[in-house]
Image (cartoon, rainbow, N blue to C red):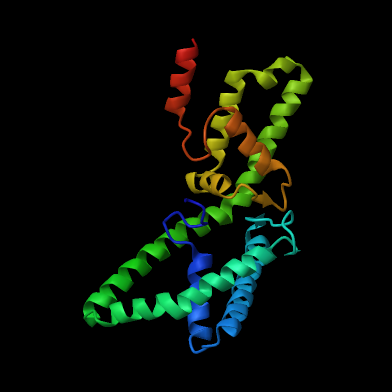
Length: 232
């Protein structure tokens, strides 16, 4: 399932969470102590990640406010239980098996594999961070575009244009021009994502793309022209 902030198959929150519990709790043998400690550390990491992303990029990628026993919408009880159980399995079962396997590899092979994975991760993170960094500025320009379009309609354009399919396609095209592929992907994979500076804008973008019959990552001008041609 494509649901992580990175474009590739790695989920940094789960990955760093796994590394954290293995490094900090690898010597804990009591199952209950391991479960509680792993759940706490994992939720702490998730909470701090949510705060950091919001402070740096003015985005809130997930929101658990509607979940029972949540803390400021950033973590909640079910997540604690799932993280605690999953991390305990990693420490007690998965990591020993992985260590036994990689321990048998020749050092050059191990270094080559680890280096290749690291290079892919750094490249993916660079693209992702670049998209997150410019996201707020692009949302600002998109908000200005939407405000200008609404002003033109108020000034005299037929109100039915709001439901006109050609206008909808044009607005979808404007969204594609303003937002990069990775930014449109984030809107798709984080259905609860919101901007702290542009409160309802992300929802409006998502709704426009959905009403136009496209996904935030797969819209293309050629596809739009093809649909218009079929309607014509």
